[in-house]
Length: 349
Image (tube, rainbow, N blue to C red; front, top):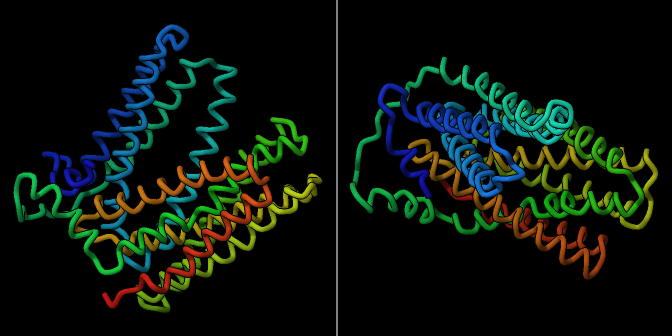
């Protein structure tokens, strides 16, 4: 909702997207420091407000970061650029979702959050040294019209509605499998420690490697072909490979759950799903206009996360009503439908 302001306004002395990144990152750091000093047992309402602000500031910073990336990366660089972005995302999940929990048990709530705040301060250094070379954007309209016009231009592009449907459905099989694999492993008798190691360390490591491999491949393909021609083949090829790999989750669903089998499946599926995700990020960047990068990219990533929410609900209901096997198969079928629609989204731009 506020991405048009990030596209339109420059902060004095800080530049365009660089300025917004710095401001939201500082607000995020201050929020986490404040949260560290909360008595969470007695002040749940304050904790809830701090959680909301944390999500708000980090998501807003992400809007500006993605918009900056759209403007910095040439079409030939977007494969490896998004590979690095996706792998960094997964590395952050390992640190934030695993390492910090271990530290919290040993160092306590306050010290753990203060360490997160310190880490985020270090993350500010690269953007502080970045030289913003963007030029001020001319004001073509004012008032309410200036707010909604970029949205209208985005949604009025040829075949954009169909593309957003593809974006919404493309990752359904990954979302379903990610939602269900944890309770499935519990049902197969794995301990929480085993599940944490498998899904929290091994799988995310595979995702990091997969994202970097996909970024390298997409970059090489883009150097040999035109920008418009490379997005569709990489998105379709990696999507198909990812979905066929997801079929391997059928094995634990029918009771085949030895450790070598589970580790092999999780490594292969996680790595290939990460490759498809990286291809989707690169394709979304190709659909973003540098002048309205915040609006264009954020609208598409919002469609991705809407798909995450819907497929998570679908996964739980299907698994409860029909079992894991049917839920996995339905998720894969929906994603394959999205892949089949990709050729129809191509335009002559």
